Length: 240
Image (tube, rainbow, N blue to C red; front, side, top):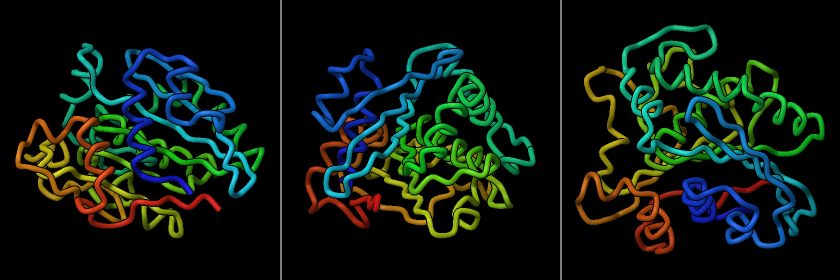
């Protein structure tokens, strides 16, 4: 059983320089190994974790959000609709970035984890949350299934017609959770494209002071999740 706050802490750690010590501050001795995947300024980390209460290994994919890199800015700005068989009608920039990470080695890493029959959880903050949703769609194409997708302050990804924005209908029993901190502005964009949605089966609001930009910080999500009185909805992820 993982707490959602722990996943948010992982998303915060993903913004730090990668090292074993960085991840041990979150997981301690439960961290077995980690592998980085990076291409064109985009980055994610695949953690192999030991879950003592279930005596099993679990893989966690943590996607980094937008930083002040040109590639991230270009990705965010490509908001025009695009169609593909895998993603349906979707945000063009997010789709391209997800495919680049997938081809850069994420597909091989997750294929290995599936071969070992390990549960896979996908998570990310901001742009990283969008990446997690697109990765779930790519896993389905490869006959793989994440047990859960958990996003923090993720933007809208597309239209709900057999694509990435309609993942829950395709995943069925698996859980997709979207966390929104107060009036976080990123969770409401792109706002000029009518009908666009996130793709989550459950949306949980964290009750914070009104501040559309401040509330988007991953540190604010970690803080809000540490106060159960500010949480609405599910905040434990079962890996059993």
